[in-house]
Image (cartoon, rainbow, N blue to C red; front, side):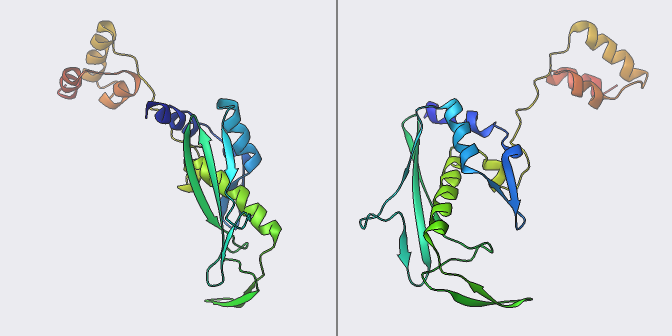
Length: 195
């Protein structure tokens, strides 16, 4: 469990925003960049395209379309992920073209899926799978950058504390300005707040 936490903490902090692309208001991370980032930190990581009993890398249902699966293993922990094969409008692709109505633009057509569409989806599924380990997870939650660890402030020295008392008393600084610069004990904060 500690190893999993270490993997997630490491990958979650990586900023991959410079490697993303926008398409139809959605943000995508290229599989090559994602996999390269993982290998920089975990060179023994591996991934698998899950093949079905038929030997094909997808399942197909005539009502719902195609679905692909991947597995990623990092530090002996494996996550499986799945993703439907979709067109550019995120509509499920099937073996035959079909039409649907949109609210504002009338009838649209979804083309039949090709092996190229399936291959692209497998690699997008890999990136989604890597996000389960923390890499680029902020992209899926609509954020621009990964979470940053809170900045550790130095504890206030006795001399700086005395100067803070004087400065707050003379209304030269506020308590918030002191707290932005130093870590205060609960008692120090109460005392400065009462000035």
